Length: 559
Image (tube, rainbow, N blue to C red; front, top):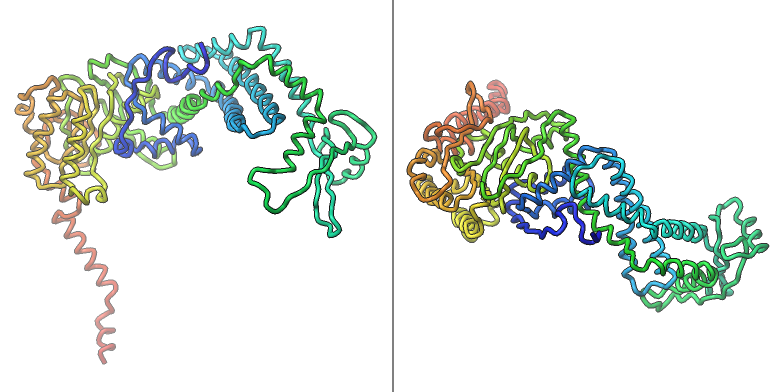
């Protein structure tokens, strides 16, 4: 196995078959909010978000990821050691950028190569140690362990370690540079040259004594003074990137480290086929799994359930869950807010594959709809999911249809924009997709909305994709027999958010809708029921009474 072809996200030889989530879906599932909650590093947030938008639906690949994640979650010490290695790998990535600079002086290219191999040795050694210390079970981490162990134990690696160690120690002796500067009659610097390379840093108290000591000894990196010739300082008209001091430094380092440079070249020439930069390919995978494992570990420590997803045949188009909840609620708890997490059991099957979801306003319909999308998103990336148990057939993509930003509806109007997006969804979706509609078609009249919604549900049944249609149109869910009489193998069911003892319970269950309340729910949402309006009027009148002067005061003012 070549490390360049290795991935913690894909089994060996498996070709990626992901679909990229649309921008609307990412917004509707609050992907950016979730990723920002996983890590404070902007770089890591971008890495995680970029990987989360690539939705893989191959069950074998997803199971491979699940096992890798479980290993990393089980061993906190493994995570900590990999975090230390990430610092080395990040440094290696910076070195790689420098290595691409063909204009660099030969000596610095040589030093860069030496540093590259030094980090390579440290990373191979570190990965080998941390993977050997733990009882890992996943195919991905076992493959990585086999690779680094084969590198670590082959005879050439021991020679590499010794060679690099000696060379690094030799070059590492350089701790400071002594410069000689010539001045003109006006005390302005006109020439600069390197006097010596030193094995100690300059310190203010002993600077003069140290310099005097340099003149008495000779070596390549020595306590002494060695005049190397002067370079004119051009302060005006200097070409961009033309630094005479650095050019002189490069030349002098090569001259003063003559035998050392030759030794570095000879030893490094043995390892021309080794690329330490290939290890940087592991950075995104490590960042992704480690940060998610840290996050899940915090929730589990608080007693909030997170479950390993079990993959089912994609052709079954099923999902079975216990104790499902919205991950955003758990994030709020981690941030210190007091939040009650309501868990629900929920399934997709051929008997109940398309849900018309109704219930009171602010009863949790949107929160639940979003929760289902997040469950699929996490599960298919191998991450533990916000539930007590979960098994599912992966979806090939997630399509959401939530209320649009008003700025996007200027040209087509709200109904036109919603209809256009619905049309685009049905053009792209397959029977293995997941469709999440949240209050779709609620911006038009009830009669128009219901008319279009019936056709949309009929198309959902014909398509056969797992769907949640969250709506205020209770009448839509009262016509299940009619809708299920149309062609399709996924049956339409009514799902409601409940009321317990007059209070919203945020529990969902299969049941007929609780009456024709579309208009009432819309009125409550926008605060225009009689009781809401009366309350506003009463508050305004009380506020006016407090600000008006007393009757006697009014009389005095008139006089």
